Image (cartoon, rainbow, N blue to C red; front, side, top):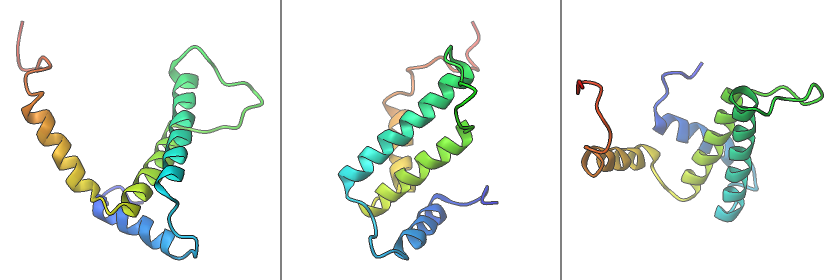
Length: 112
């Protein structure tokens, strides 16, 4: 389900979902708070799985996948509300990494 969706399709799907409600999109500040909350939940799950702080037996089960999905949803919601095309934003970031940072890391094909 949905594994081959484009970013444009994801943004349209979120917009269709949000548009059915009178409240519509939250304000940018509210979405930053939600984004921060979701990032914290993701950090907590990563710490449970890979870090020293294991989950208590009384804590609800969640997954890194689920928390990443929540984070992506809020990020898309915020981008939509600000009329930001995330595919275009991604292209800009990749251009920056491929130019400014092109020699920053050791490439796998560079043998020692």
